[in-house]
Image (cartoon, rainbow, N blue to C red; front, side, top):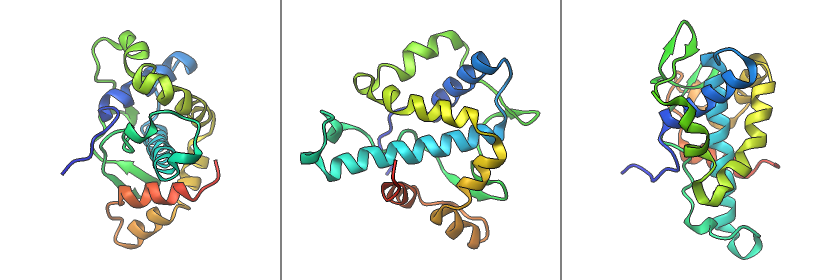
Length: 171
């Protein structure tokens, strides 16, 4: 059974790609896209799960109704860190799928859960865009679930374990 998600993977990835292009004047690399998706997935999932597990000790209303899964994805351990095999790419850049790109900014991110997704993820996305690919690779490869999947013949990572691991991180 597939988990309920906040967004469809490709629409969220397109949002990131369009935002990156607007801010930096170039297409986002497939490597940076994969790491940005991984960290957004992990931190969002941890944020929601920690809220649900501490419902009497949080100041955010409605978190018990939020989906822990930002999008549906199968992360694979790779030589450069976690990645999603099925992302569209062309010449090692993410390839935007959405035809009406300008509609994504307001349509997709800013409205979900009364804007709480945007408020939480926006600073993280800015930080991820500012960090170089090599640092993102290095950080992601230190994760326990990545190490487990890598040691298992570069296998598939367990999304539940990714979120549980990030619940333990201080952010």
